[in-house]
Length: 369
Image (cartoon, rainbow, N blue to C red; front, side):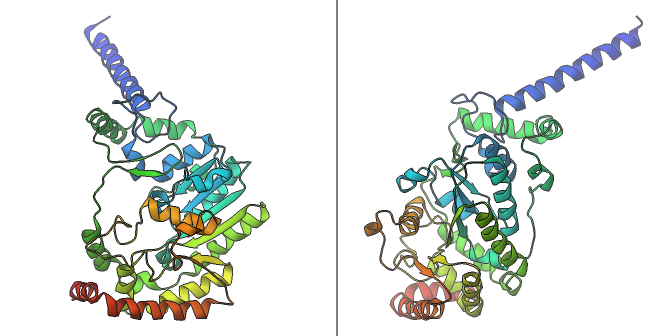
């Protein structure tokens, strides 16, 4: 064997060894939560990268569940509705299928995928984020139609995910964060994002919301969104799955920002459009939960993401569980029969709050300027 041949053999052997090392390390650390590698405290117990790759993680996780109940929606479901809450005891097993920023089309496709993987599915609780009724996009980054056509992670996906420099970087970061116990946000086994950070980001988030979201393009009602909402209802009916729907509650300041920007009529029309499709529990408005003072926020992480305690109250109302714990003004079923009277109440509650909390109104007006 000449020198060149020996060098080539060594080179191939080294490259193969490094490839196997990368594959093995990524498989074991499993930063996206897609392999069945053992979990070790201080090493790979928490998977922080799943929160930025939710569509991949939950597509795989759904194949390992035996859910009777699915919690469906975007990030307000993923962070705010606890699948392990005592009010859901009789509906277990429950899986949180919230997907950050998911369009209603994506939610519909993941529901279909869940049904194909969960033969015992009996109930879906759907939380509607209002601005998604104005979302004209079909999908967001990370969504894959091909992935939802398979019931398992196929071999090509497996290799692409695990034999990857990006995955190796995520593995390194996960290893460091687990070792130092610095993982502040991660998914638990039932799909809920657990936030270990006790301090909210309210003021910063609300300013960013006003800067980025209050514009005409984001508040034109989307027929695509409404059509997929109607399909979700029909899919549940066809599969004899009970469907409970509610509108998620942002803080009143976020709603007021939209009114100040001239979108009050769009808010009201969104509610009218939804109730034409199905009855819905409405938590969106000015009530004792959403109007808490902004200098002492305890119900929210930011201007739209409510904490688990608020999610528990939502579940209590829609499931008829411990209803005495729910403020009387928090949550009402709206239908075509009562929609106009409930919209009138929302306007009255808005006027009352604006007169009482002049400090917050002044704050919002300065932000608008």
